[in-house]
Length: 493
Image 1 (spheres, rainbow, N blue to C red):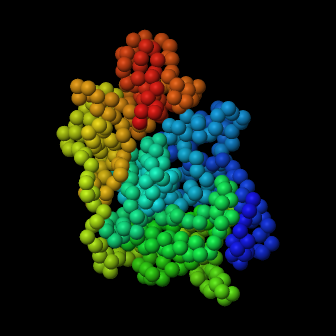
Image 2 (cartoon, rainbow, N blue to C red):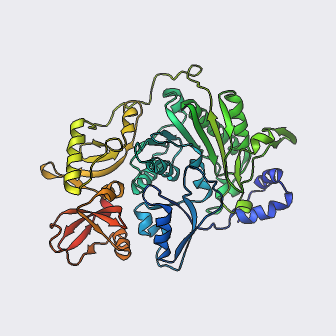
Image 3 (cartoon, rainbow, N blue to C red):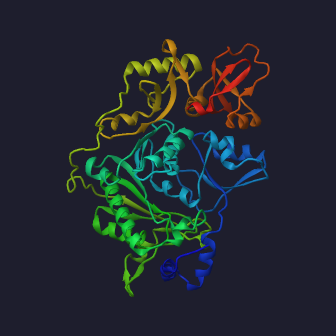
């Protein structure tokens, strides 16, 4: 393990006790306990705990979460010796949980999410926090709202798309834009914005010590500028009364407290710092040293509202969270310019009433699912039917997008719809016909992309018929009956 001495000098300046430095160095690159985020709109905590206890697994509360309107969903997980990785578990493959570091699972919890909210994740890849936001929205019974998952890097956005599909987060929209443009072009359209900013990554030494080896103050200054501009864009595009959460996986105060200080000054009177209510947190830094001079950047009262996760104290990755509330509109001061991010060559999509009726009738006739128009909106491209939320219509013509929702069916011959894997993972749990419940062993085989032999079908299912795969009543995917087997359709999403 190599840690740049310049970086250690910076850290030593802000440690509460200088004797902590050796502990800090040691914990920076220690492996972390495995941890997961449970997909609450698919399974409740009691059912999940009971289910995995039968396999010798158990979840352990990290002890950070104050009770609020969102049930705790982030846990350490212990498993008995097993011959496959956690990421190959069928519960992971079918979107029941997401593998996520504990500290990284905290920021999305502080967005004050309400039913039907429209939320921007301005720098979303690889998508863990977007799936969290979408999950929280889907946990409400009626209007599912929408999460706009943005990233400027197309390759990273593909990973986000995969994760949203796997987790069944159909109330989502992907954009590939420079995050600076939202505030300039759209104005105050989002209820909340998450800025999980690109950063120097010092807090991820448990994965790789690369960032710790190459640390340079000059590069940090460049990153700070990007982070500040993303915060400016986020605050401009957030509605009055909304929340903006800023987070990084880094430890130096320049990317963290100093950016908070600068943004409070820049939007003085329009935003306020709110408390990040986490148990056993470390609070923020009030002073930084620049050119051998000490500069106060935050009051003690404001510093106490922030949350730091130190590797040697909280035993997590290094992390930082700040929460702002927008208390005053900025629309008059910063009127949005001509919208240059509206779809220039919009996808040829069909969201017509006739399509809604056609798809709804098919789903009800074939699978017994009565479609709730307040929760589901279908749209068609030339090849597929996608499921999204009705809130998509508010953004369809003002925001250039790469992908919307989750593909649930494709067009077949004679105007038939053919269900895809994601049909099962999104609305398949609601079906009351044409489904098969699999046991644990068969579900694992299904997630390993194997076909499943089913005994004693007794003519219940026609050959070449598509069925929803369920486990414990939860929709897990789609299969096709061929010669007494369930032909695996997992990879056809």
